[in-house]
Length: 212
Image (cartoon, rainbow, N blue to C red; front, side, top):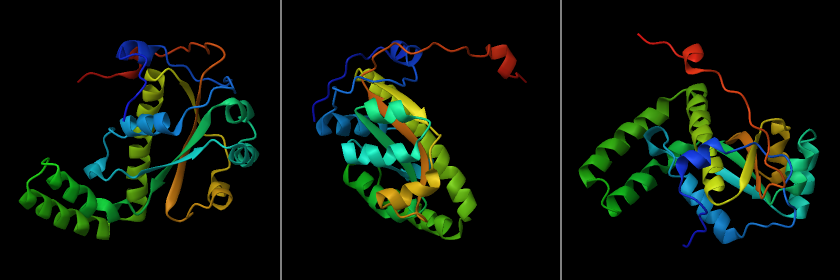
């Protein structure tokens, strides 16, 4: 699949990223390019490579109208963006271990004997893993992919805004998501900004770091 990356300058991508509230509503991101952005973002690491992140791309007028009701304090991001990506974490991510590790063998990334040993150990691990421990892990993993998604979008020439202020408890019912399985993590608006956004202050490292 071809991509439309605008820059590979990582420092430029990282340091010039801004949280954007207003986008050009006439700019639409094709399904092909959105797929490429998501594929690139999912090179993010995850615990035992279980990849618990799941995405819902809300781009239709109808979908945005429903989402706007749940994100009352983030209306402009929802209504003007090309799309809003809802990031979820899958509580049943352990179900995919066999598939993931088998594919790794097929691609030559892992010997068969290593795969068999790993799958056996991980199957036992997930079987006794407390739900809260699993939840904490997959939320971290989903956070990693979300940050990578924002940087990937920037590399493609788009801007984003991470949104935590929405009615997470109602996302499942409104969008037909299995509530007990998929944990809402955040919304990410994505599109072409109409302004540069605001720079923001960061603490100096000596304020937030200890050396031993």
